[in-house]
Length: 251
Image (cartoon, rainbow, N blue to C red; front, side, top):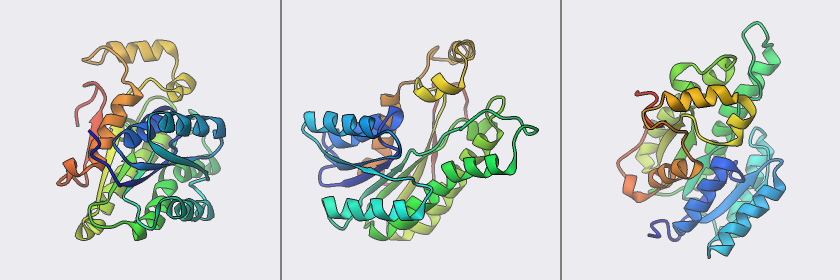
């Protein structure tokens, strides 16, 4: 069902893994999608090609979402491609960067993780929302780590993802009178290159075994949730941080 027909969507960090799945899902729902990427040009091109092959519409726009000029350029490119109104903003940009204990972290590292995960969400919201109208939606990506403090060496990452949830609640209150909704998705163990990079195979297997559903999640499952929250079917949901972790953690 194409419940997003006529909508314009920006997916910040939309070129790979969960971001790619979200870009493709929104496009399948009828949205015109701007796939933002930073360094993964080939992956962005592949995502756009997959969307077009499926009959959808998408463009790729490079930009570092921690830099105001790049965010402003993304907004400008979106309006040039698809018109003045932006209906959906999904913030997937983020990452752990590295696992470091408190003793190993310095100020530069801590602030870099905050910029990547929190500042990026602030900047995209600040510069996209002036172009949003009634019924528009923001979906931010947080993490289970923001709920439970994360695993070893994830203090900076977990803190930043907790801040994303709080920022989302504040957006919901501020933008609600304009009938713009803001929600947050908190994935648990999802099979992506994030865990390929930062989580040992043994730890992944143990987490999956301890999950009621006895497996890792898939990027497409997160995309289904994001697409629902972005649609009018979720018209009375705002300020929520929705868990998707196979029952590993209940909030």
